[in-house]
Length: 244
Image (tube, rainbow, N blue to C red; front, side, top):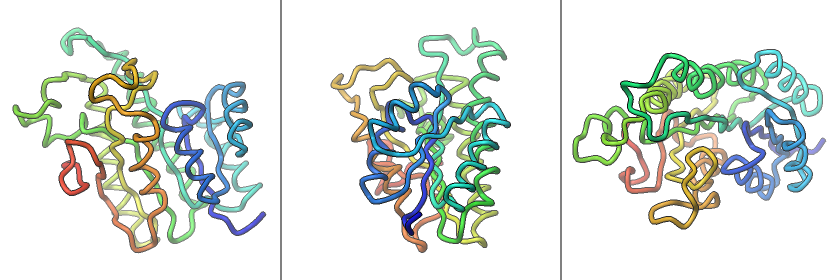
C-alpha cells in the first residue's frame, strides 16, 4: 500500500458517483467504488481500474463489512463521498404521497448516510473529508422563496430528505471539527441521470462531468478548507454557496 489518500464513494457504479470515482482516481487516490449491485459495481470498478466494495447503505451488515474491508486493506479512509440517493416521486402530488414513499426515500438519503458516516469516521485521520450529495431542493431558504424555481417543484419526500441531510451535514461538521475532519454538502446541479430521467443535453440539464465538479473539489480540500459549507456552482449558488 502506498501513501495515497484512500477514498470511498457510495452508489458509484453509474452516473455522478462513477464520474467522481474516475476523477479521484485520476488525482492519484486509492478509490473504492461502492455499489449495492455487485455485478454492476465490479464491472464499473474494472473499467476504471479501481477497487470495488459491495455496500448497500440500507443494510447495516453490508455497511460494516465494507468498512472492515477498507480497514483490512488500507488501514484508513481519508475521503467519504455519500453519493447514493433515490428520488421516487417525479410528477406525484405531495398530498398523494404516502408514508411508504417517505420511508423509502429517507432510508437511503438520510438513514443510509448516517449509517455509512458513523461506520467510516473511526477510520478517518485528521484532515479527512466527508462530502454529502445534497440539492437546493433541500434548501429551506429557497423552498420558502416564491420567486425561486425550487419552491414550485413540490417533491415532498426528496426535498424533506435533503433538508434532513443538510442538517446532518452541519451537525457532523460541528462534532467532527475538533478531530480535524471536514464535512460539507455539494450541489451537483441538475444532472441528467437515472435518478431524474432527464436527458443530458436538455436545456439546463448538466452532464455527469459537470455534476462531479463540486463534490470532487470538496473531496480534495486541504486541511484548512471550509467546513459546514453548502457548495454549488449553478444558478442557486451565490459566490459558490447555496443557502441552507
